[in-house]
Length: 163
Image (cartoon, rainbow, N blue to C red; front, side, top):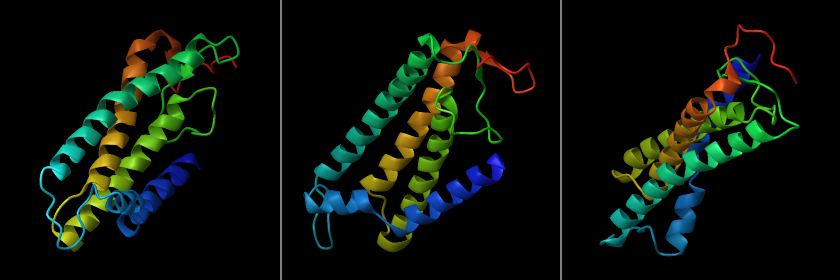
């Protein structure tokens, strides 16, 4: 059941990313993303670089902090299960599962947005790159948390962790 829900979510994210561009609309409104006939100049590469860097650096640290709070919480689980495609992403006491799903969700949305931009505009803008780098940041954060808190993680086939 969870595998089906996750796959449907990722497919829906790809389609929505390809069809809608709310971040791009916002960037165009504030003048940070060029519209038709507007020269991007130096602002576009700077914006893409800054957005990618922030997402790639801050997102894993935020995921690590969220998992760390649950690792030291007396109300959390005693052992985390490794996130996978067949596990529930709705259990907030085991947050790596949510971040694992959300990482793939945002990567799919970013991939859909990037491919749509390439097909319609012939170039890649901030919104697709932002979604992609944010999603990769979430996935990197999950990996990082599994490394930092490795003593708290058990394999799926192991005994049921205490709740």
